[in-house]
Image (cartoon, rainbow, N blue to C red):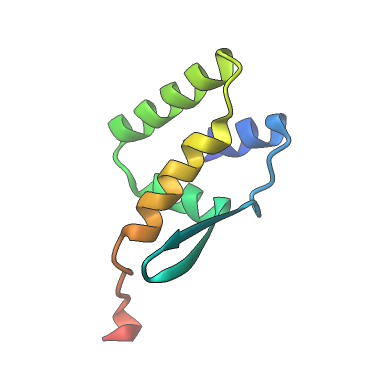
Length: 88
């Protein structure tokens, strides 16, 4: 899906550096579209296909795919940070 999504976004003229800004009680969280792509790459194949189908449906109906991607960015922002082996 990663290659497909990059191509889809390029064809739509949407930059991977697009920033989603979400305000919450904890302040403001910033998530880039590139981060959303990275998150989607961690999903299993079935989940990736569902996201792809949803994006295609939204696009075919003339909808704003960025609104859907922003919903995914909200999921990313709400997720606990990943711990790497360097963090202990």
